[in-house]
Length: 206
Image 1 (cartoon, rainbow, N blue to C red):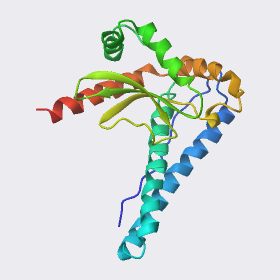
Image 2: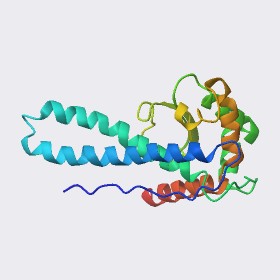
Image 3: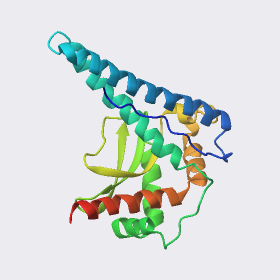
Image 4: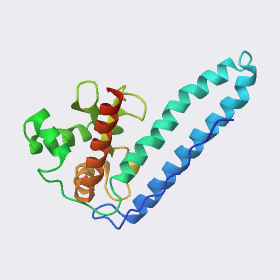
């Protein structure tokens, strides 16, 4: 029997510019992704017993699995960024140095990332670490599973679906939400993601 995923709990304090109601409703949505991911895995176990007769259903479940799983995992990165209160990034952070090495200036990168977050439509702005080239990469991911970059480790994940901010801001005000996210961001969490990605990369390349 397939081992199921467990819903994570997050220690998110009261935030500036992002209401407790928004976080509460958002976490309920995350819970749904965990539940749906596990439901699909359970159904696949059932249908694969007669894979020939269930071929169509299995194909649709596998397609849906990517959406639900990535929705679950992207939210886990996102909520972890808001845990334990904001921390300020400094020039001593390894991720700060890596950003400057890639883009020349931290503020230049930050403005670029915020511009990506304001892409029209729903999706995610993500900063990745590419272990193959040891470089950082920005991207926009439509929905949850369309645009994810293969083999790269997410460091910073910003949810730009309207459910992340519509209680507090109108769609026309989503720039205010982006600023609120960065005002509440625990940069230490991003740093830990970067150091972990580097460690895994170094270990696998030995």
